[in-house]
Length: 489
Image (cartoon, rainbow, N blue to C red; front, side, top):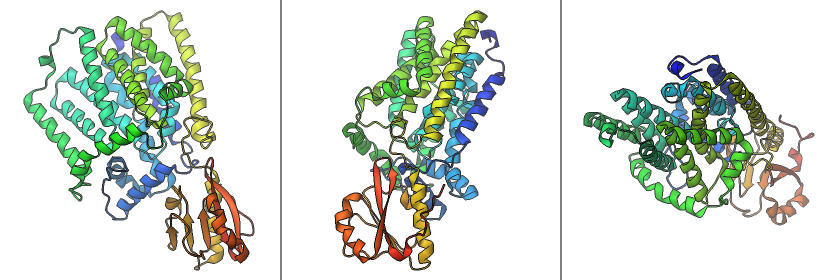
């Protein structure tokens, strides 16, 4: 499609990408057991649903948005695995139609190409199916860029207010919103200088009244979320002091230290089509001095450099790089729309092959080998063996009927507290205390020496895996041992 068609409605390929994004994020949502972080997030959400207070904790956990946003879906759908993940999955897929206002910047060909890259991105699919914060952070990053882009064209107050709300929501999701905004500000400066636009800074400043309304919206969103809808006034102070502990964690690594090349390696391993197309788009943006293309390219580069410089690295942080890189690739697709048919056909064929590879990688990591630690996107994921563990515990509980107690001595326990939350007589302890007599004991293998005398008192033992390389020893009173150890799924 040529540039003269840029403002027309996108074609069926764009909407097919949206349909593919929905299927990729919604299919088989129940297959993977909850991740460690998902179990914690589900617990906080369940507290809200059952009327218990939620207070933002700046020392250990991220922002309140997922819990408050998930309250209504939780009321309507419950807290099953699919219901918990559904709001995140839909949010991830909705990034595709959110691209529509960027037609003036990228053209229909540009947003259609970007839509396909985002729809089949292995990392966006993998983490767009988890109840974690990162997908919401990336969604509001895109919403902010879109709203500001539209405001620059229309100068309407409502578009500025939408941008202000998106910026505030970024911070209610996660403290690393500061890195996102830092990268965007740098990108704006570089794009403005490099593009040599005739507009002055004064031309870009909003009307003071619009700025005042935007500030009001920003503060209002901040207050509503961090005070948990006015029930926790102290959340405002916590929202400010949160940056120091998270800055310290980022600088120290806190057990998640990775070397500098970690994200470039992940990008090449799982997002090669976005990397190649993004680099080509960046080159075109520099050559053509396209402000929006330059903005996206610098934004992507800044996120790669910032997240690479910080010792604390987890693979889901990569999607903060994937989004601007995919937007930068839109410059390539817009350029190709005006090129001869043979060139367009050749590139389209290569892109189709790359997207097929992405689809295979996404299915492999999100559905097929979700607990295979040899895949670098798999990070402390719960083993599918947990289904066997839970079925084993439930079978023992059924034999015990009303006389059932459980105690754990686990150094790593989540998401087990979530799955066993209905057991009334359950204790979670750091180490063995006294002489255990509970129906079932869950312990690390390192506790075997302490617990081995139980074997002479009629207990039996079986091993399961909580995560790859993280075994759990299950000690069961002999009279409760299931006749056949069941398999849950």
